[in-house]
Image (cartoon, rainbow, N blue to C red; front, side, top):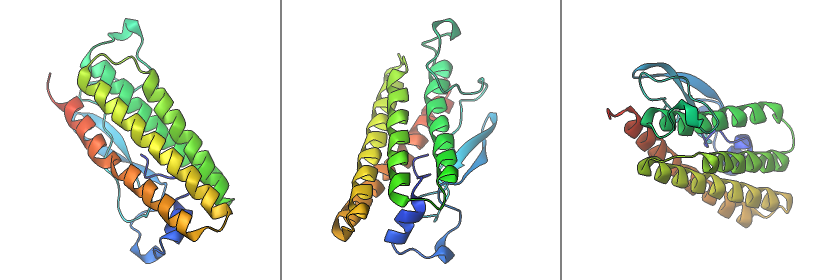
Length: 198
């Protein structure tokens, strides 16, 4: 999800990556096959060099919801709580994609700040989930931290770009890459946990 950065084109320019090395358009998403469900979603990496892992809902479950599960919807069950957390992640991917499309070709610094706001929202939405399963609580905390770190680094990058601060831009870009580098293994772990039999 987080690799679908609204300002990916700007980051790619800073990194001096060539278009020929891309396998997908940064910030793009696509559906992907998941065991036990019709489809999931995955995002293109910020550098366009790869597709990120598929974010899947647990098998034999209802469609993920982006909001916290209601108490009437079997709160506390693994399926309901997995759906809630995966729903927040998927909604974040969709919002980043929409934001990237809306801001295409406009101010890169503004795009970075908008992306940072979206990442903060993903973290806040995950924090509002009423998760009771210890593993999912920990996954949510890790995801929130990663999203906030990405948002903070994106704001620093926007400030450095506005000031034409190449050193600051490079440091902020490295911070973004470190933050989003934590996402792939975390999403894989969430999917493995949620798809494992109870």
